Figure 1: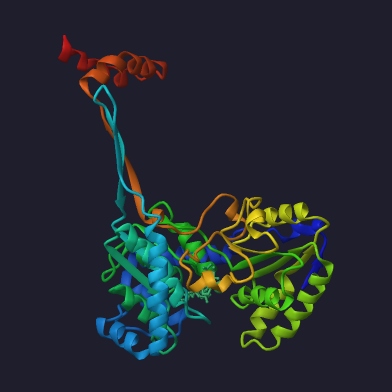
Figure 2 (figure 1 turned 60 degrees about the vertical axis):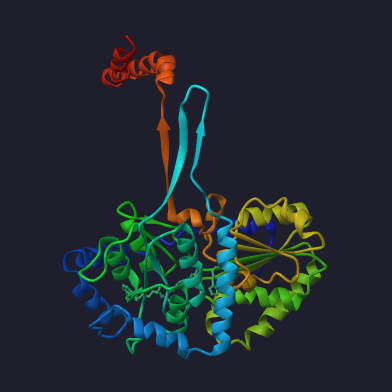
Length: 424
Ligand SMILES: NC(=O)c1ccc[n+]([C@@H]2O[C@H](COP(=O)([O-])OP(=O)(O)OC[C@H]3O[C@@H](n4cnc5c(N)ncnc54)[C@H](O)[C@@H]3O)[C@@H](O)[C@H]2O)c1
Ligand SMILES: N[C@H](CO)Cc1c[nH]c[nH+]1
Ligand SMILES: [Zn+2]
């Protein structure tokens, strides 16, 4: 874990993974093949990359129900409670249509309509993510999306982890398909014999998933290109080194490219956290992943002043920011960029990953400078509504026609002026 000067912070800047030319080409070929050959192509790629041959890739209702009853009763209770918290939070994000009328009878407004079909990618690989099922499906449901399709890669035995299926069953998701990577994204975007295409694809995944989402964007919408997890902790003398170290490691265990950064003004805390990170590392089951991540992307930055520390935090623009200081709310006021901000010693990052309610699909790689967490708004679109009255057109028609002629668009001007016949 590198000890860094504030001046070195630019070396921590990350960018969205563009993949290699070879990977981009492979993804384009997979997408084209799925477009041409549908289910058969998906099956072939699942056999090749997930090393399992699946005849019927749609998960049955019985499989979903059995997964739900097969998991531990306490696990079920936790899923139910977390889902309720996440739903409550997202209910507050709901936007409604509005219409405004003025004295001359004009009505202007904004009509909010859910998208028809949402495709949710749930990553597979070394970890299973029932929490990502909740975080993607619930905002879509709150938005009013009628058709939600979930895809996730199967294990080599052809099954999907029970926790993932249980979460889908709890939320009433009926269309679940066993496929991952670019082939799953292509199937969602363009459809196959058994999977009707969706309008928007959300959810994180590896580089093949990210490249495929980028490739299909435009034909369908996507949420964002989410990279490996990141946490930055701003801590002062009130923070406990063991707790800070544990929080840094909580994201390091996701991926060998996850990043965990401590920013502080306290040199002694910096040393203590570094020691605690290495002593806790050894006890983790995902030791190798966490160690690689800490070695390559972990950093401790000691700043001279609180103002400098806050500037550093804004430069990093981390996916998750913990503020463990004497006055966390005051410090938060100076934070401009972060996907999610966790305040005080009890708001450890995993509180947000699983349970508190806000979404854990968040902007990574510094994109918090211009983008936001996944929200209900991601699953709706807005139509502008214009109803001009006769009086309004009489008052403003000439000005509109004049504006059209300013652009040299005569047909536009005449479309307005032809209405003058009505009040002649
Ligand atoms: N930001 C978040 O909220 C969040 C949450 C959970 C996971 N993640 C990230 O999701 C990622 C999960 O990655 P993963 O690989 O474990 O699972 P994944 O589901 O993203 O990818 C698995 C798929 O990759 C494809 N693939 C593998 N090798 C390939 C190859 N050589 N050519 C073409 N396709 C290939 C296969 O089709 C396979 O099904 C991690 O990077 C993790 O950090 C992010
Ligand atoms: N921290 C991850 C990205 O925000 C989400 C997650 C899922 N499970 C545990 N953590
Ligand atoms: Zn996490």
